[in-house]
Length: 453
Image 1 (spheres, rainbow, N blue to C red):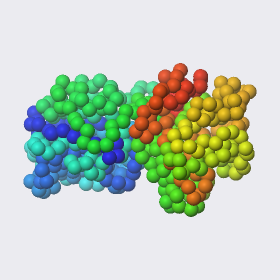
Image 2: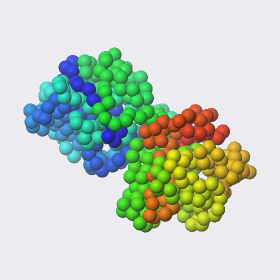
Image 3: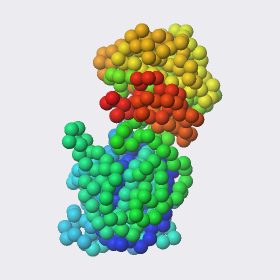
Image 4: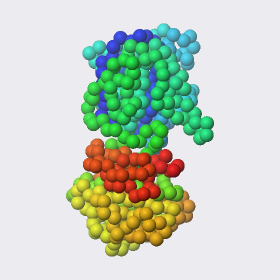
């Protein structure tokens, strides 16, 4: 979301002391104050759910100008690859203070807290009161500031019932993972709603008509969801010092123009076997020294500021002149791709240890990603993933010159470059992900479902 947020005016609740909020979130940025939702009646009466700048979950409320509640977890939430399911079950009529608000994450109640100022018994909960001429918001504070940076899915709210997390999710009997219930059944109450359930719709899909409007920004649909997690760029694995800037759910990158900075970033998910496809679009013609490829040593690449293709288990395709890079060596290979809006595709075949690149849909060196062990047009024979330092390969990009910065958008299968949808989706037999160009037969997006094909 970043600068994107939703708003509506909250009406009179069925019950202003009892209710539930359930939402799935995937974080993009850490270490900053980020509001998930806020209900703002006026400057003296409001409440919000947020991630603090310390990366913990906090519920904070103010009534008649004074703090009414502050509940804050000890546990930090810093996984930018995972979807977190957060449930607040509130019932201030309970005699025991710890029963007046329960926070669940992925079905498990958070019981270790650094702050435990609960609402008083029978006290009004400011998350449910009418907002009048002011706003109830999703993704920011009431005025569009301190916005949530990441993705959200299946946002449910009800007033009048404190629900268990099992209404909205369940534990998979095979994997033990917490899974989404895509069609939960519950009584929503007067101010309840269901949004972001089917794509990016902000029309209330409950029995109410409590629709939201777009407060600011661009609301983008994503294939990345709680039931199929797609790779994004990893903010925990960036060059030290002046770091590249990530945005749009960590799918877009702007490298640093400071001298001496090469490394930009790599994917959150790694590849150990199988066949995977990814696209990268160069979005600035003035920063035309990018290298796109894969690395088997992302942490060391970041720590030591190495470009893609520096290591023996790192392989890159250089935009400036079309050279191929591996083991700190450059060899003439294919066509340059340094024009604004050039799209480069990368197909990684770990079953046959081959890699292929296309420029704007044309496979370089007459490459054929379906050629198997023959490896027609593959610029490299890869080291087995098990022999790389990380035990896997990761998609990534870097600068080929320390005086320039690669600026571009990854499409890991979400069907977007930044906030722009692909012009015409190519074919994809796996059915996982949406790409600009045809996905080679046998390949798929780097996602949790793709990894399990």
